[in-house]
Length: 357
Image 1 (cartoon, one colour):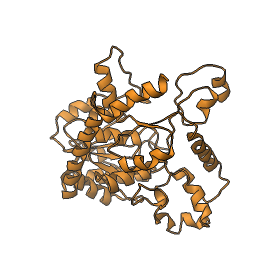
Image 2 (cartoon, one colour):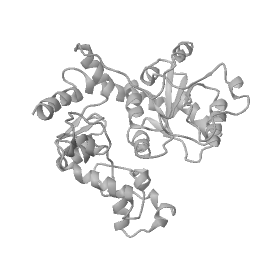
Image 3 (tube, one colour):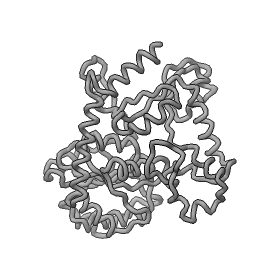
Image 4 (tube, rainbow, N blue to C red):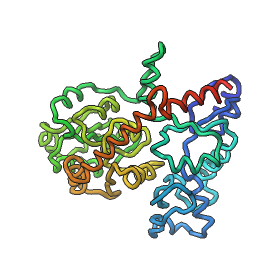
């Protein structure tokens, strides 16, 4: 890919390898990063491979100002290694070292959401432009521009879910979606299904054709019949539109960052089931820092799922999380408001100070 890019001029490159744009004469890149020095720090402290299994992952990370209650288990999962020669760790270290050469860092977040961490990182890095949440920002721009926005998705959305949602009471539905690429074992899907059934609550479950490892027909016997009046399963949907529907009272998610930003924009609380990459770190922010979510155990069973779904939709903790979620929704709207929102102004600054420079 790098060779191909070097042979042609590109103004924008969307890719996860931030060292590639400079080779293609692109001056600004936007890498995703979080504590990627973690693997090297583990090795430098003298821990061997037992560190990953002896409970040490519960130890706090204490070398990053601006983070509280951040543990080693929250570090990017693919660099949780004590091998200094690990290929992925070497790649990530190279990406981080390239950041200092960037003209700008463009982050999909907003100032109020991660203010302490941004204040800590800003003096260490090239100029940071926070321009999130993206969708309301795009809506603000589209309303004032002749250029329309374009949707894209890996899957075809089914619109029948909206008629079903219209039939449900306000804040009575838990929306379940694990993103575009995460996969689960048949036993995990069965426990989730049984938990949803035992909760006796309404649910909209996005069950992708490739969600289950090796087998798509893994729902428990009689599950569909038992939940037919309060559950709907579809293969894909327009997530932002679903999350903003009045009947949706919570979001059971894998904690992918885009899903989190969409949930915050809609003002819904979360049930978190993180698995890989940055998801554990995102879950930590949702539950421990922003106060808008509950985490499902890694080795969960149906009873836990059912209990947490009920707590989310009708419990005291759920009510408090909903209140705080609505506060974050308001702050997200403020950040993207034209013309004085922080993200709106940051986008204008980005264009003037970097793209048109």
